[in-house]
Image 1 (cartoon, one colour):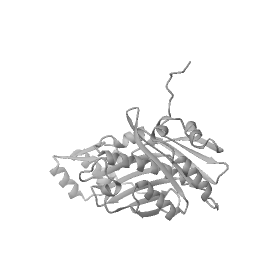
Image 2: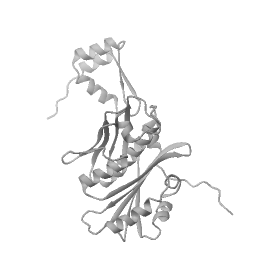
Image 3: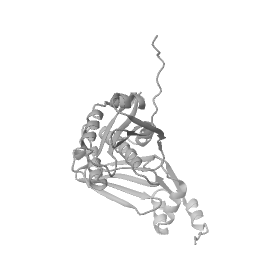
Image 4: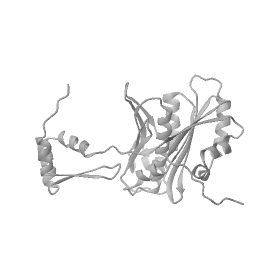
Length: 297
């Protein structure tokens, strides 16, 4: 008798895997609640929603390839109607993202049609060590191809990304697979091309609806694959009233007073990432100014 019980598919997860017979590593990630949190409080055009999903998946996969503790920002900038799209993440797979749209964007718009002349900036800020920034022009047709180009230029590691966005159980979802040649290995092109050909057969429905084990078996059932433990992904904004207070206190007093006068006696600081509003009136500002300054030695 067929079991009609629904299979629970774990979302907002990242799994690493390794091929025993090839010098290739892999990752697979699926984002639902994290993706939805980024889309909430915004009315992005469909093409921008899909691009943010791709950027979110790419950032998650990119973060997992870096062996460091710290933060990463993957940012698109251009002179088109989509002037900015950015996803911030860290080694704990805490992500947030936002886009700025300054014009009409068709649902079928391409990367070039949205961003115009632009580039990708990838900024890595480890807790210990020097900050690194890589810049890649938008020379390819898609965001994913541009990020693969970054890997070749900056990391010099052959890397392929397979990313899908769509709907699953009436919720937006973004998912992807990364394949990457291990460092300090040679004569890998045959193995890499073989695994690329297998991975290219993945469909959006398979990525969205199958378990990780089923996906890996369907793609690589003739290979020896080791699957590692699951990492969970969450949306985390990081904004707070304290940060807003600190920002206000860096402004000249007369500028803060002018904003109060022009905005009806209140300063409304809005977080683009999560949609929260932090309100400050004249009494709040006076209390901030009367707080004792703490000096650190």
